[in-house]
Image 1: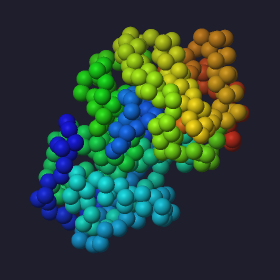
Image 2 (image 1 turned 180 degrees about the vertical axis):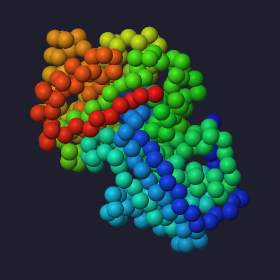
Image 3 (image 1 turned 120 degrees about the horizontal axis):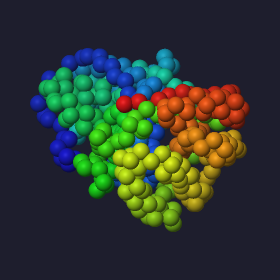
Image 4 (image 1 turned 90 degrees about the vertical axis):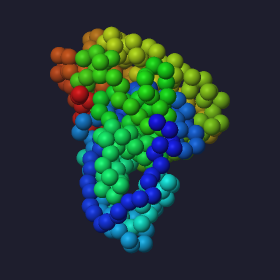
Length: 352
């Protein structure tokens, strides 16, 4: 589908209504870092969608009122977030022509802690986009499930790039790449279930809360610094190249190659940050201590515990439910929780 196909219709019957939706977060395996105009990714990415870490959103639309947005996070009014959503709604008016013809009261809450290293912008904009599609269908007519989901992913991308991946379960690809049929820079697609070994369909993601405060550099700024990073083009090409072995790994169930590739991608993301101008480091001492302990544990036990990182200090611990998970959980609780701020850990799964 092209951008033109997402343009809205002029004939619609708007009325006051309230809708609600839920959307999970996701964790990228091949990382998206760097973007072009209109939230077009500089390289393709693939992610696991989480099962429990979600944003639940209720959107009240009051028709024929002056356009405005009020937002509440866990019952507390968030003025700055409302300003961000107002700007977002204005940017997507061409795709939803009715969107500025009323006021909005948006109440949202996350099932996971703020600043936890779990992408609340992904789940948040995913939930908002799903609510908007519900409104659009009530005003403009019912669409097919596939069409509605694709447009919701398209709209979510314009709010937060990685949000477009959260609209789908399981393994999800965003960015046009030859290895994945139907992939697009405009929206995400679900990775074909038939091409995924069963070992990758039942996974744990325990997030160690190494640092629970705000990041010193926002992801938006970090993406922008890729514009002048001398290694950016090579990084974008490497991400594309990594889809070749990733496709083979997902089909064959080769856990050792999967671990190596996922950890390499995580460290490359942070290497790009350290090679930006100005350079920045988001990992903390605890992050490095956890990584080294994971590597020692794998060498000693040969058990499939590994990590990935988002643009922050917290560590996503990944391990399959293959019979070894109890030993891994015991190790995490005995050896790794001590490196968090308050024994903080968010336990989630990717099961599909």
